[in-house]
Image (cartoon, rainbow, N blue to C red):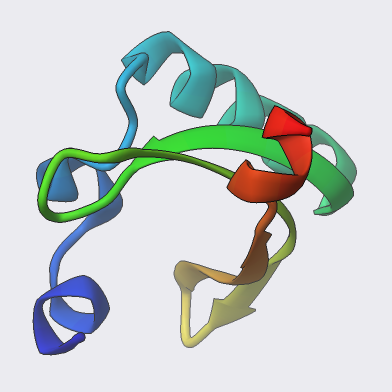
Length: 79
């Protein structure tokens, strides 16, 4: 958990497809927020996971931050 909170997302290696992250981030910048977005990620142990989440871009003291949350829907998608 500490690593996830203190490491920039590109360095975490959680996106199997870096282009997907780039596309999502571009949309986030364009819209300011994303809701109910399905994303394919990779857990720390390398296991693929599908999540549905939301994100909001916020600026504090001239620095952009992304506040996000997601729910694992991997098992639901397999049914």
